Length: 157
Length: 139
Image (cartoon, each protein chain N blue to C red):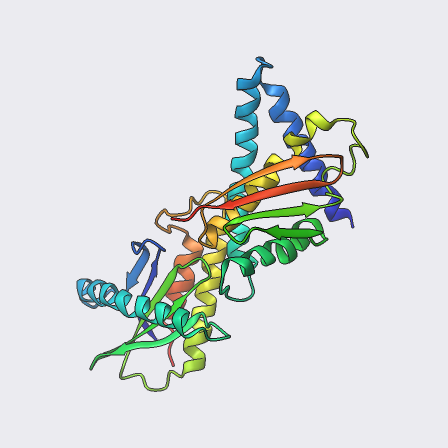
C-alpha cells in the first residue's frame, strides 16, 4: 500500500513545482507547465505501452479496453469505471473516483485547479496509444471532484 | 547461433543491426532489407484472416541455401529479424522463440530507459551484451 502513496506524493510535488516556477501567472506561463507535465506523461506512457500488453490487439476497441483495465490497474490499482464511444474514433473514459484527485476535496472546491492534476494522466494515455500505433488527442474534464472524464479522439492517418 | 540480429522500427528504418564480424556485413544488411517485405506480407495476411490468436512470433520468413531468416513483430509494430546459419540444424523452433523473447524483453528495457528517445538508434551496452551472448552461443 505504501507504493501507491509514493506516486501520489511525487505527482503532487511535480504539479506544485511546475506551477510555482513561472513568475508570470498569466495564461501563457500556465500553458507551458501543463504541456511539460503532459510531455512527461507521454514519455511514461510510451514506455508502459511497450512493457504492459500481454496479448496482441486486433482492433481499436481492444486497445481502449486495455487502457481501461490493465493500464489503469497497473498505475492506479483500480479499473476505469466507464467507457463510452461513438464508434467513429471518439471515446470517453469515465473515472468516478480518480486517485490523484481524492486527496484534494470532494465536491466543487478546487474545481479550477483540478486540470493541472490531470495533465500528466492525459499524456500517459496519449503516450500509450502512440506506442500501440494510434495518434490521438486526449483532453480531460472535471464536473465534481473526484470524478473526471478523459476524452480520447483517435486521429485517422 | 545467430549470425545477424536486426531491430527495425515501425517506419521500416533500422534501430539496431549487428552481424558476426567475420562475414560480409553488406550481404546481411541486404537480406534483412528484403525480409521486411515478407514480414509485411505476413502481418497483412494475419489481419485479413481474422485469426483469433495473432502471434507475435512470425516464424521462418524464408530460407536460402546458407541461411534461414526468422521474424518477430511486437505490439508497437517494431520488427526483430534474425539470420541463422543453415548448417546448424540443432536449433529448434522453441530456441528461436526464446531468443526472440529475450530480445523483446531487452528492447522493452531500452524503451523504459529515460535517456533513450524512441526512434533513435539503440546504443545501450546492456542490449549489446545480450545480443553478443546470442551470437556466440554454442549449440
